Amino acid sequence: MNAIPQLLFDALSLGGIYAMAALGIALIFGVMKLVNFAHGEYIAFCVFALIVPSTDAVAVMFLGKAPAILLIPMLMLIGAAIAVASEFFVFRHMRNATPVAMMISSFALGFVIQNILLLIYSSRPKAVSLWPELNQPVSIVGASIPLLQIIVICTTLLVVVTLALLLKRTRIGLEMRAAAENFTMARLLGVRANVVITGAFALSGALAAAVALIMVTQTGVADIRMGGQIMLVAFIATVIGGLGSLPGAVAAGFLIGAASVILQGFLPLEARPFRDAFLYTLVIVSLLLRPDGLFAPRSTKPRV
Image: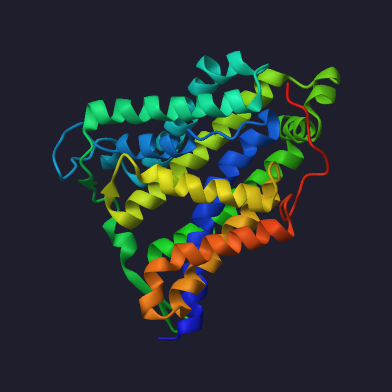
């Protein structure tokens, strides 16, 4: 097996997951200056929407029984719905609050969603069999790659291209870009604040659903805490990329994925359990060199 192509595909696949999760956070921050720490619970909620409520160790499929052509849009609608509902019932009433107050509210919302899942499904991790055939290896340029990795890479590229076209070619996209530059001025020029913010939350929730599908297919496990780790890495990616910068979130997501894979591949065996310590050391160095991020926005935008 050729090690270099294997590492490349691993890095692109892991980086793609981080990039999509980071995009979901960056979209909200761009228009509201809100770091939405409930995003990880959106991911967990979408995972558990696939299965029947129970306390058993082996999950019985609910939405997961549907064919992929129906399941994917349905789950993305569920992700968008829970994100929009959180905006309508929680964050819409806090637009004049400080960023710290909104961030604390997002923590609280995350705990509420997590405890609802605990009440319905219990804290026991569950084995989930969703599209196991996607974990079958295929041979590409001498490397044995799970088919799922190819799908993740292609999905990430599709998401990035689609989002770029949406932001550049549609009215709601142009309004989002204007709001991200200067929300107050954009509102004075007629940008529809509620539409822009609701659209950003809907896109963020749909991205959370996409990440949920990939994670549950890859790991075969539904765990109430599974959104926490990806949320942490995604938040770090948005900071490294430059808070509010969508290209920065994508680039930093791929960089963190690549760094993680390279460290796992080249660290001595006895040092590999401490891979995350080395990774976060690189994060600290990056922020020391570029405290505003790799793609810092041109200005610090005022909120609504």
